[in-house]
Amino acid sequence: MEFNKLQHVPSVTEIKQVAEQLKGVISETPLEFSTSLSARYGAKIYLKREDLQVVRSYKIRGAYHKISNIPSELKSKGVVAASAGNHAQGVALACALLGIQAHIFMPKSTPLQKVEAVRFFGKEKVRIYLVGETYDEAFAASRKFCETNGAIYIPPFDDFDIIAGQATVTLEILDAMSAAPDFLFVAIGGGGLAAGASLVLPPSTFLIGVEPAGAPSMQRSLTASEVVVLEEIDRFVDGASVKQVGLKTFAICQKGLSRMLTVSKKDLCQTMLDLYALGSMIVEPAGALSVAGLEEMAEEIKGKTVVCVISGGNFDPKRFPEIKSLASA
Image (tube, rainbow, N blue to C red):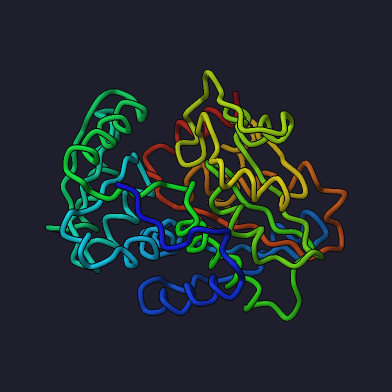
């Protein structure tokens, strides 16, 4: 079953109302000045630390906003999500806080650490279904469950309620600064975070989207002026690797994005190592995308004020030897 409170592109006024709704639920994450990155690029570079969010990613924002607005008469049906990562954790915590049953479908290949994190945040309000070997199989099973049980599906990005929630990340950035930044760098998977940013940034700020080179779904879509479905993708950047961006997110990003960048796996892994070495930050691959994108725009950002959103920190430190190997490949 589908439910949407917002039937239109969210306005800044509506997004500010969402921010009020989220107070006491989410953390207002720090906007940290990075001395090391600022020195490297000759710019004032700040990091929006969504890796320090309560579920270690921004996804709780959109999930809580959407689920909290479900009409009372539909809440008993429960909600459904398909995710192997941060979206699942956001939905799980939102349902635990709101007392709504969550049915979360994850592929059998999902690392145990992520399954346990979803169980931890959802407590008795989450039921996990490990189905199929890929996300696509888990997604198909989740939609079938919705049809059979009349539960409400919570999409990961292509939804105006979700976009409005993710937009509060950028709203916090603007509220924390005396003047809007010259550049905002954000990771793009399905496009929810970038679409949200597009709706609240002033025209003076250049919005830069950064994708993994192995899954350039937004870049290809922008080039074609329509949503493109990629046949194959590299799923290494699991938080930002999708075959198809959202229709709603694409329409917003098509107007709001100033530029799209792609980052190689090698460069991304080196960025993860740098963030750990210079700032003791343990970020997931998707979380490092925004910082990894700085190198390609080193000349343009000199002397400018730049914000990079660190979108997530759900990463097992035991994988650092693998990251080091890929960085030196």
